[in-house]
Amino acid sequence: MGPVGTADKRGRAAGHVLRLAWTALLVTILSCFAAARADTQLGATGYKMAGDATKMRIVVNFDREPDIKWFLLRGPNRLVVDLPRTRFALDAKDVKPRGLVRAVRYGDQGHGSRLILTGKGPFAVDKLDVLKNDDGSGYRIAIDMSAASEREFDEALANQSLTTGSTVSSEKGERVGTGPVSAPGHRFTVVIDPGHGGVDGGAESSAGTVEKDVTLAFAKELRDKLAAVGKYDVYMTRDNDVYLALDERVRIARQHEADLLISIHADTIAVKGLRGATVYTLSDKASDPEAQALADRENLSDQFAGMKIEDDNKEVTDILIDLIRRETHGFSMSFAHTLVGQLSTSVGLINNPQRSAGFKVLKAPDVPSVLVELGYLSNVKDEAQLLNADWRGKAAQSITNAVALFAAAKAGTATGG
Image (cartoon, rainbow, N blue to C red; front, side, top):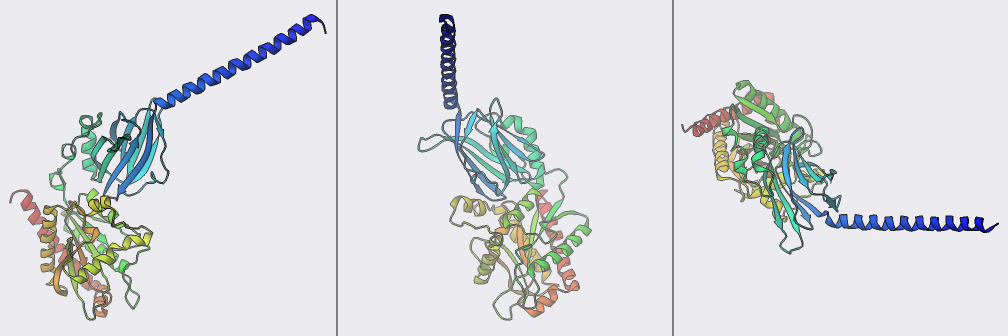
């Protein structure tokens, strides 16, 4: 090969080396740019949820203060939080849906990032704040949500232009309605809750009668009698053999803006010879040992679906217990007194038939609620009555009469009568 060929070969080799050098330099520049870009992105470092199907708290941690905007969407009911470009380093177990939150989604939107919380039906955003962490390690978004009615969600949608677009939300009272009484055209609404269901059969008699079947049959009878009056909207938490967690039953009552929740049960008891109906209201302290034992049994229902109730979780306990309002409790006591009076004329009652205990299904903060123990499946005579259509008809009519008296009295209170 001559001098020219050798020079060409060396030139091509030098060009190849130069191209490799430029490629390496470009890769280095792009890597530095990507690293610098990543450093400028907001970092979501943690996500936590606590609560149940009636009220939830969501906390999202960031490495620095996020500039956010939030708004509501329907079809399905969603809370959308818009963020700057964000790197999400969240544990999949932490974002698993639970309670009032049916789905959690997050990711990059091109011009920014977004967190979307889908509710299990309509909800209210009670509070949404950006707060500095106490240890100085960063910031967090704290979101309080609670089950609400479609009307309340629609009102929040209509007013959201006044309450979103900043990191500090206005108080709940400025965004949503004040309850069923204020709703235009609202009819007195009753939610009937047949106890137990699905994998949770409840109590069982020695003859094989199962509580979940008794409560459902009676609830349907009561529903039909109330609907026949023509003055009420009547709903059931379940109308077939399906499992429902206790907080789900409360959520259904709240989202229907119920004026009254009636939970139907038929337990067993070890006290020989004890029989008759009982009406329970909510109390932090049980009226007697039997009431406490019954509440303890009913409150364990959620464990049939593998749900462990953490009583030592202060945040959840506050949500489940401490929201009871005096007015609601007063209405519950008033209806219980009226109901005992009506039942006493048609069915047998135990001694001291108006009792109280800490039933979780009665803990809706703004829905007057009672639990009616129709009788005891451990008593042969009570069991026979519970299976008798005529007896069920009489008992259901007595409850219907009590509802009529309570609805009239509540309407008089609301109108100042």
